[in-house]
Image (cartoon, rainbow, N blue to C red):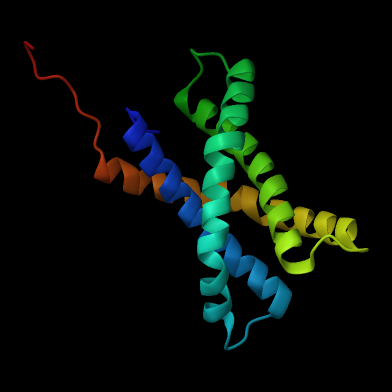
Length: 157
């Protein structure tokens, strides 16, 4: 979303922030349960995870996801089909990379790395896809459309 690079960066940042916050809570609750340190644990990991997510989104996943989506969806397709296709590819790519980040950050590259990684990957995908399609995506698009309303040309201009 966004009609220029600045708006696209703002939209991407808003989406990443929303997903990272929700997914951080989800992963901390899975790892530690609901306890008195929940907010502290989420806050400690939030900025590094957000930095990694933004980098992955902008440099790697966003380009690949949009490229794949536009090979599948025709330019004449309804906007909702384009949005959903891009969102699904984005979730797949980001879950793969962010689960890798989380596994390395919390378990390192030890004997049980692949067991931890694939377990976290599955759990994150189960949460991230509906979160993106039903909560974070619509919420971010709503807020973004309020911040940057679509401008129409004045009659006679």
